[in-house]
Length: 273
Image (tube, rainbow, N blue to C red; front, side):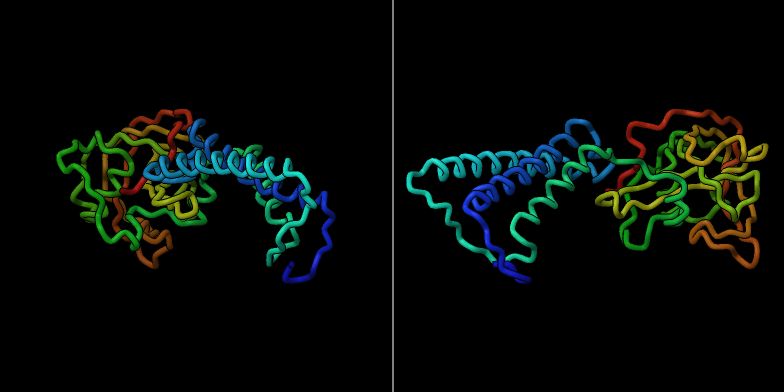
């Protein structure tokens, strides 16, 4: 029985509906397994959950096989009159499974995409970890400045946010270009997304980079490797909140000496611990 209305099902349709449920379970099991095999899981969830997703996909495939075997046995029973037990559902019979199948097909057709600079501007780039991360992630203090990744620099700033402390330190970082309308034309943000659990909670972090020329030579979403030195600049933007400030504020800035365009990495995101 449906909550909204009671549907009269023919015996053939009643026999078909379990097959639709099996197909939905099988489709999602294969989709999860496909994400794991192709390495696309790293664009969707934190690597800590990869084995859980793999196990879930395998279990769904096994469950679909067991349900298919039981369904076939039911069909082979002599004297089966096609009667099934009615259930209370929100949607008409078969609709829920159909939605699951359609969404699984969409997952096969549409590959996961990498977040871009537009998404970074919408979510707000920060040079610190979000407030929700109460514990500062561990990092090796003895790492040489030029060996720190962009995310290592963010973690370092989160631990000790005094820009003058890093004056003159060497840096060699990679990330994608973001053009902020709040920065001068010879500045870009070099940014990366960090995933805490899944892509839904991904947040962008980054550092302002001072260029020797106009930023038009480096379009948004271009991936760059930048070598240079850390310096302190006074800007009318608070890189902690990505909001314009009424007065200039000292900010840590990377002064670029060498800029190299690189391909988009296979693993573009950073991950929190």
